Length: 112
Image (cartoon, rainbow, N blue to C red):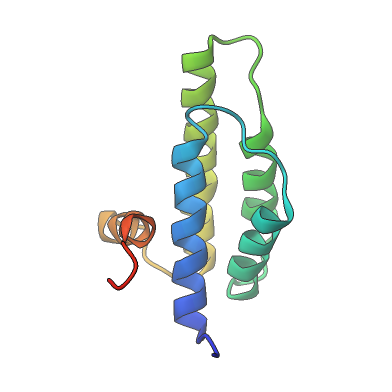
């Protein structure tokens, strides 16, 4: 099976969007799977690494100065900022429709 660029890009974006949602509860641990997602999206990008590196850094932050609830809010807000930059680096419009499509990707059930 061979994925085309658009399918790979949307799968990666959907999975990264899912990580942003998970980061409300706790920092995301660095892993090979997260590196692979970022690399897959970056392979489709304009070559600007900053938002991908920023996402990697922000997902791990604990924000010890804040309450657990506020730390999750700060972490997700910063990760979401990087996601907006990632979307633009992929040549996609940074619109509500794009955000909805990303969210739909990880909410899909098998067979959708």
